[in-house]
Image (cartoon, rainbow over all chains, first blue to last red; front, side, top):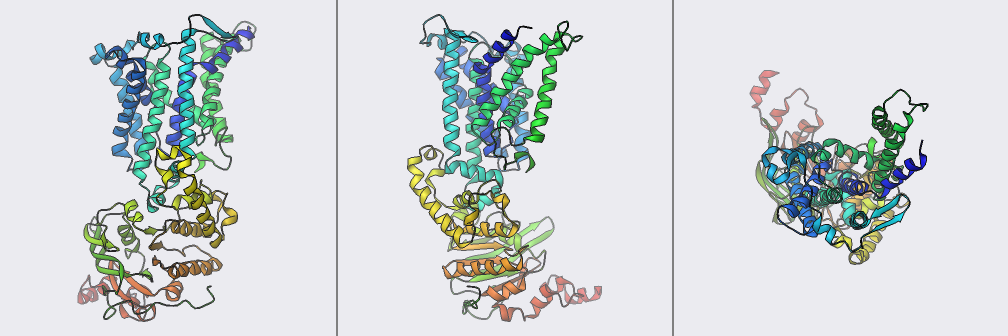
Length: 327
Length: 296
């Protein structure tokens, strides 16, 4: 077994745009669920809106790349208002139902053949990179060290992704340590009590839904930055992978989702590389095909999640007095 | 403080003490307020005035509509008909947080401590008009830091008064039931209310804590606040209330100072239950007495 190759592939996932996308989306979910108590099961929908908003405004309307990001943000705000307006006055479970359905509606609208000319339907979108790559200040070439060696284009993707990430982390941190964040946490605990103290609960929930949704959309943008948009990515299981990353790190924390997403992808990358290798002759999983071996990783991730929920329900970074699962 | 007999406010009303009597200086006025759930009329209050600067108790048997009436007054529920004025201002159609902002704060029958916030955070949340609660201003701490320090100072002062300051960094979830009642009341005071509405403040509180809770309620009056509370504990009602309003089957059946109101036949009938064999509907006049009699 080529351990060097396996470890190098694993390490690479730390700086991969997909990991950044997960961190961004799980930070949005942290604001929704961890701080405001909003059950959003449609974060994949926000990501799809972000990705398509970015690519479509470049491909179909000839916008520059940065304007594409602004369009994504605007689209996420509209989507959040559409979801929140009818549901945020109702009990929390209604938001859960509406978000999971709306995310599927969004995905199917992007997937349907009816709008093939516009959305590219099942083949997705590609070839929207010119404007983004032209803005790359790095000279052509290949830079880096060990597993972290990329072309200047790949570095540019990572630099933009990381910059967005830093801005979002700062925003979430600044918002949640402020009195605004305190109101949000109060709403999470009991919104009637907060209403009785004269706070407009509905407005706070809407603000939280919008901001978290924008974070999710930025995740979608970063997902789409390096190569192409594939509509099969934005399925419900993406939502649940992001929930996994969030709960792994700790829902009501700022750095928990960051850590959770990184661990999630490092683990995925490691298992993806190591499990097929273990099915080789003479290794412990001999007898399985390499495909079967690689599928095993979902079983292991599932077991891992169960163990976390049972033994560390507050997540890695969560306050151990604060058991968000057992409320 | 509770060793001294509380000073009762008297002379609050104009004319005879009967349901709907006018007060000299009402802070809260309700007119023709009704609320029905399907066929059941839970609240049907013709007229009620709550006197300013006094402690008013709202009593009545279970199902009398006290809590529903409370919810209507505080905007947590919307009446089918009627008009309500707080401090001379119509609050009809206002939402709960808007009413709260006018200076009318309430507590809940089932205590609502915000469990996973610390005691101090619970308190700070109560303060109104916080600059840092605006989404954009929250990002720049220099805007709200000074106000936050003032709020913290006031919160700690109140926590000292309610003997909770040692718990200030603990999650509210770790408090006992009685301490949560205290915290809820202290948090309500952070809003600087003019009217404090307490929904069963004594429910589930042990006798030792009852004494201190009573003291705190009396202190509110001393500081010039008006108190309206729902309670089943007759001892407390007699002890601290200046005025008692009795509800039964959604209607106000009696009003008056505690000593005299307890003597009234309607109260004895409706609340103390000495006429258990009589239909409550007869007492409130919903059912004709002869018709009620026939059923017996």
